[in-house]
Amino acid sequence: MNQNANDAPSTDGNAKIDASEMEAQAIRGLASAYSRMREEIGKVVIGQEDVVDQLLIALFSRGHCLLVGVPGLAKTLLVSTVASILQLTFRRIQFTPDLMPSDITGTDVLQDDPETGHRSFQFMQGPLFTHILLADEINRTPPKTQAALLEAMQERHVTVGSNTYRLPSPFFVLATQNPIEQEGTYPLPEAQLDRFMFNVMVDYPTAAEELRILKQTTGSHTPELKPALTGQQILALQEVVRKVPVAEHVFVYARDLVRATRPNEKDAPGFIKKYLSWGAGPRAGQYLILGAKARAILEGRFHVTTDDVKSVAVPVMRHRILTTFQADSDGISPDDVIRKLVSHVKVEVKEKAKQSKY
Image 1 (spheres, rainbow, N blue to C red):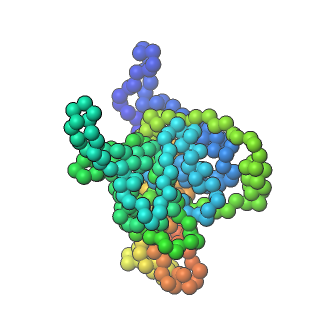
Image 2: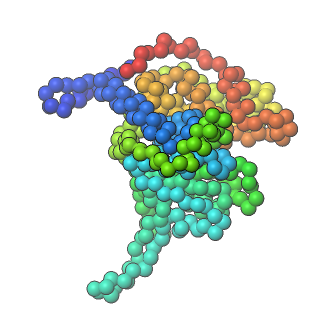
Image 3: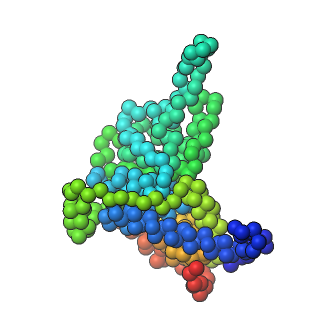
C-alpha cells in the first residue's frame, strides 16, 4: 500500500500518526458503521440483503440507484429507513403524468416587501433540495420533468432561469419503477438510465421472510432506530472510498469486461454478437471500479480484487446493454448475458495474496 509522506498530527498535538494508520482507522470506522447500519435497517426491513448492500455501496460511491420491483416490496420503507439512520433529510416525490419540472426543482415567486412595497422574485426551493430523494415511479412523468431530475443527478445543482442553485451534499437519488404495469408510462431513454450507478432488482421475499413480515408489521410494536452516521461523516467516508488503491490487472479486467459487451468489437464473444445489439459505455467501467472500491472498504479491506468487480457487474451493466430479438426469443435476459460474460472474461494477472483485514 502506498504511503503518504506527510504525517498527520494526533489529537493531543504531540504524537504523529502516519497516513497508513489514518487510513486504517477510516476503514475500521466505515466497516463498523456499515455493520451498525445493516443492523438498524434489519429492525425495519426484513430480508433484501443484496438490495441493502447495493444501495449502501452506491451511497458511499456517490452514485444513484434505480430500484425495479412490484409494489409492496418495502422500497419506500427501505429508503426512508436509510435516511433516518444516516440523519439525512428525506423527501418522496410521486411522479405523475401532470408533474412539471418546477414542481420538483422549485420556481421564482414574486414577493412584496411589506416595508418598501418593492416587488422582487425570490426562489422557492422544490422537494429536490434534500439529501435523499425518492423518485417514485419515475417512468410515469413526461421526459421534460425526467430531464430536470437528470441535471440534478449529474451536476448536483438546479438551474432556474439564469440562476444556478447548489443541492445539499450528500445528494442521493433513488428512483423506482414497476416492471409489470407499463401502460401510460414514459420509459427512461438510455442516456438517462446511464446516470444511475446501479439498476437494483427488488424481488419477492422468501417464505420465511414473508412470515416474519406478517408478524412484525401487523402488531403495535414500532422499532426504535439509532443514528449511525451524519452527513459530514458520509462525505468523509466517500473520500476514503475514492482513495482505495486498485491494481493494474483489476483496471484491465474491468475494462475488458465492459468492452466485451460491445458486439462490434472484433474480440467480442459469439454469444455477445448473438444476444446484444448494443454494449455498455465507459461509464460502466467507472462504476465497476467505484463499486468494487466501496465493497472492499465495507468488508474492511484497503485493496480491490477482481471478485469485487464481479460482485457489482450485474447491477452496474444490466441497464447499459440492449438485448436482441434473438435473446428475447431464447428467453435470455441481460442478467444471463452478464453472468455468462463474467465467467468468460479471464483475469490477465493472478490475484495477489489477499492482505489481512485491518
